[in-house]
Image (tube, rainbow, N blue to C red; front, side):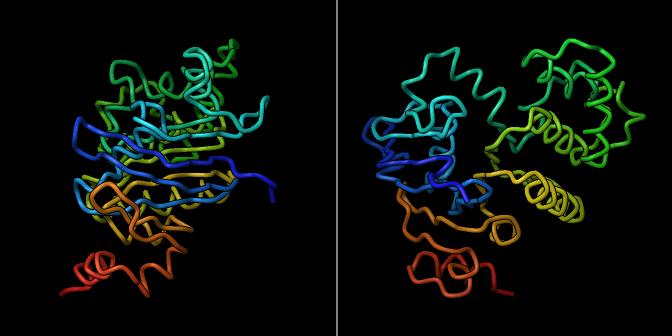
Length: 258
């Protein structure tokens, strides 16, 4: 196992004026590990994810990432082009609404091929072959490569977004409610796919979800947020089977209610 974390977060705080988005959040994410962030709407989990993925500048605190060339660096100290390249190559972001992560006006194959071109791929045949391979990996018929995403179901659009994110072999993927808004049967298939890809590719991931069943299936460790702060943090099964904080107990018992 690596001797240092892939991501180290120290005292991360984001304020909206006087209102707390998230406050004093600290944790480490190790290579191949998945951390789930759970809590009710407004608990701060989406704000935290936005700060971690550099879509929103924190008010204070550090987000350090183990880059391939420089080791652990503060991502907010990187130049804008450097940060953009990191997000294109070594990071992926899976949005709840796949339309936020796809180009709806181009084909499925182009959606998967574009990130490869952004990192220097130029051979059309190779790009098309890799796109077909990835469509197959996410259980989309490669024969639909030239179809536009708007002709796909919601579940297929989400799988296409996942392929677009993973084609550059990132080491870290941020997932924001990846199964939200999908039918239960579609959710189950997508969760199986995500779990298999995370394991097969050795991915590290941070998964924001309000669904404790999703967290149990995907996450090794769990952080429970309330009013912008982490109130409980531990191994997923331990947190869900033996919650210590009253708020976590409430969350778990509300799921178990008939």
